[in-house]
Length: 228
Image (cartoon, rainbow, N blue to C red; front, side, top):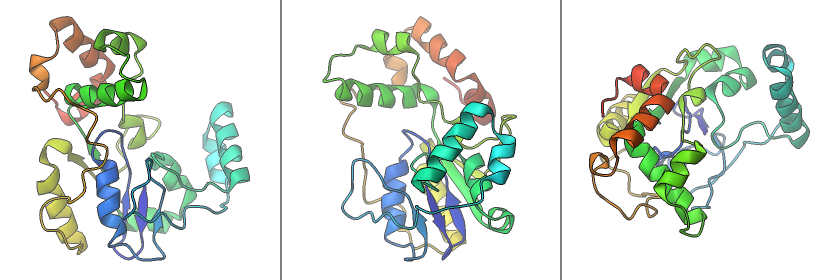
């Protein structure tokens, strides 16, 4: 997650959408007073800064349930004001209303069938290679991102959702508007070495597997009009 006072934007980091690559690129352009949360694994050219601190949790505690409120208190005791993959809703509650309303807020989303294969490949590597696709699907631990950029009523609260499929084109337009130098392509592709099977996703899924993803990601599919 990045809050740039220099360029007046808030980048909400979603999962398996080139988020780390974008953060690494922006890290080199952000000011020392900007807020950048750590990335894992560490990338040498990325400098996390200013993400620790305290805040008034009153508004946050009023709107969260008991379980969520405990997480707020836990963060407050650790002075963990901002963190990797923090939801936009929590960011909104931890910064001023003026900042939230005046800064440009954006994130990236990805075709769920393609995103799922990328997530599966990463989880397989983390499992020592001992995880087949059917086992992964049966667990149901999917890379669902919409809670990161919507409110409790599933309403989008960021200003723009970039489609991963048009990443460089949309980044060019956004960075151009914000005044961030960009040559049309991200130089660093972080976490891109997990997926060895480069076949188009349509050649990987069975009909039954396709429908599992369609059901699990129905909100993201409807929201961004993704087609198989």
